[in-house]
Image (cartoon, rainbow, N blue to C red; front, side, top):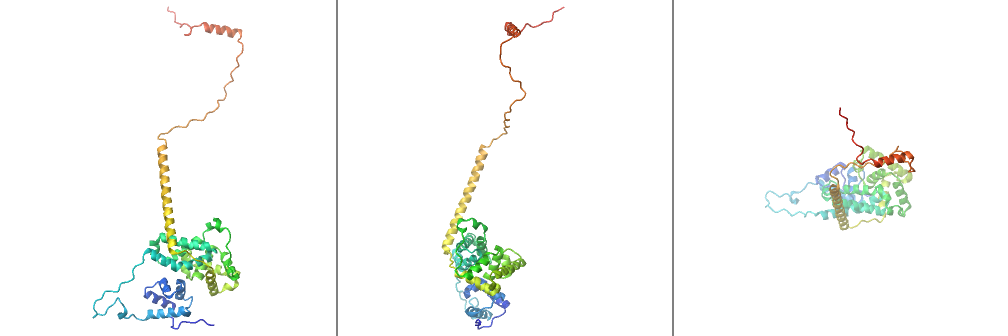
Length: 358
């Protein structure tokens, strides 16, 4: 059965992007308005996918409304020349940092946990990686909130954490987790985990998330030709293991189905913020304690260190070449006469010899 197309004609992809930008809307805002993923809007605007079904009809009607000229009577920012001055309608109150963080978490966390599962193949590790990424985002929230793509910032941190090689040394991650129940899903996950981490990440970003090639290259910190080469080799490796996945559309659908069938969930936003704040306080106190310890050790060293040079004492050495002392024995007749003579002499020695005057 052929897929349903939208009732309203769709403009070309470049015109779609122009209409969205004419209303100063981002991909995330348009996706939230239509109730679809941001990657889907990007795919529609790049021409890689065509809008179909109810989502396609809503997208076509929204673009048609963007194309219609704005009526000044319906624009609260404009008034007719003869109309009396009226106070503008109050705009929505700005969100607090906690509310903005909770909105980003509710929008990105569920899908991000499923995407991270495709990278590492572990359910608990995927959840931990996503929560760690959002904790890092909350600690740097002024920087993340002003980023042009906060969801991409969090996704990059979560992917880096999930692909870290240090997890293999954790006791809880030394044993494999139960594989998916469906044999087809097991084959696909096994084919993904056999890829090098950089190839796997490129494949998930392009065919799973729906990023275009330059964005995939930027997020994987590679050039566009290098990202294209990784994507080509990753597709060939997956197709060699599962031949039916040679079609990119089938691969995209199977990746989405594999991530959706697993029961993956993340903690609530207040819990993530609380844990992040506690961890931040812990590391701050640890840094202060370490600094105080270094200062104390330096002060003690300065107090106990000598103030002048003391030459080292040479080590003792045995004296060589000294004749052995002769053992005591009976004196001979000559030695006895010499001893008696020495005893008879005065202690001051013999008389002084003086010259005889002439």
